[in-house]
Image (cartoon, rainbow, N blue to C red; front, side, top):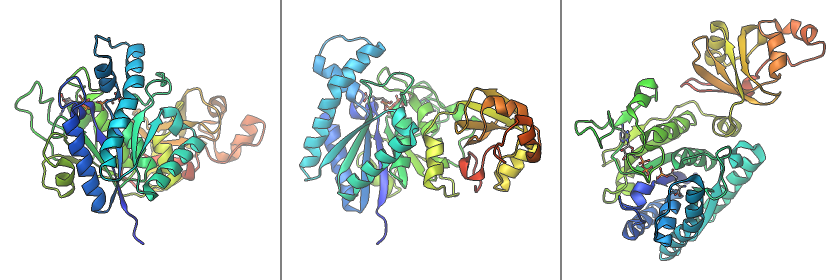
Length: 372
Ligand SMILES: Nc1ncnc2c1ncn2[C@@H]1O[C@H](COP(=O)(O)OP(=O)(O)O)[C@@H](O)[C@H]1O
Ligand SMILES: N[C@@H](CCC(=O)OP(=O)(O)O)C(=O)O
C-alpha cells in the first residue's frame, strides 16, 4: 500500500482574521472546505492554526494590552473558541478534529517527541484532522517555540510530512517587505536559504502577526534540511490550498534537500536546543561534511559554552559558520583537555577511558545540502 502524502498547513493570524482584529468566520469555513477537498484527493492534512489570541480578544470585547501575561490570558480564552469553531466546521463534513497544544519542551525531550509523533500518526491513520497550536497559556519564554511558523516546521517533521504550506497575507517572499516597498518582487523559487535570502525578510507588518517573513524562512530552512518542501502563499486567494497543490498560483517555493535523514537525525535537527559549540579545523569540516566521517578530537580547535556528555552542540568552522549539530561524547571541560589530540592520547589526557570520537557520525546531522 502506498503511503498517503501528508501536508501541514499553517494558518497565520493574518489569514484567519482577514486583516481585522477578530477571527473571520467565512474565511475559516472556506479553509475547512478546501482541507476536506484535499483529503478527498488522498492527502492527510495537519493544521497548525494561529488565532487563539485574536479569538480571546474578540471574546473579551474590551481593551486588553499586549503584555506576555495578557496575551497568555487571551490565548487561554481564545484556544477553546478556536478549536470549537474548527470542530463545528469539520463536523459538517463528518471529519473529527483533534487538538494538540505543544511547546518546545515537547520536542526537546526524545521520549515526549516520540509520544507526540505516535499520537499524530494515530490521528492521521484514523482520518482525523489534527489541529496544532503552541500551548501559549503555559509556555514561558524558556520552553516556547515562540511562533507558529517554526512550530509548523517541527510539526511537519513530527508528522513525517511531504509538504509544508505556510499561508499568510502575502503571496510569498518578496525582495523587500511589500507593505513598505511597492516595487518589491515575488521570489518564486528558493534553492537554499542563505544569508542573502534571510536579509530580505523582515518582521511582521501588523501587531497581530508574530515573526513576519523572518520566522517563515526559519521554518522553511528547518523543513528544507529535513527533506520537506515549503510553499509560502497568500491565504486570501480563492481556492488557495487546492491551487497551490495544482501549481497554478504564484507563491514562493523552497526546494527541499535530497539527502534523506532517518527519524533520529530529524529529531536532532528540530528538537533540542544546542548548549555549546566546538570549532573545527578545515580538515575536520571536510571529513565530516563530505566523507560522512565522525568528528575526532584532532580536528577540534576550540570549545565554547558549557555542556555535558550527550548534549546537543553546534559544530562550527574556523569562520564561525555552523555546519552541523550533534550529540557530543565529552563535557566541555573534557573537551578543553582533549582538543587537538589524537584519539590514542585521549585516555592518558583524561586519566580515564573516554570515547574514541567526539561526535559519532550517527549522532551528527549536517546543515548543508550534502549526504550524511
Ligand atoms: N520580504 C518580505 N516579503 C513578504 N513579506 C514580508 C517581507 N518582510 C516582511 N514581511 C511581512 O511579513 C508579514 C507576514 O507575517 P506575519 O504578519 O507574521 O503573518 P502571519 O500572521 O501570517 O504569520 C507580511 O504582512 C509582511 O508585512
Ligand atoms: N499561538 C498564537 C499565534 C502565534 C503566531 O505565530 O502567530 P502568527 O504569526 O500569526 O502565525 C495564537 O494562537 O494566537
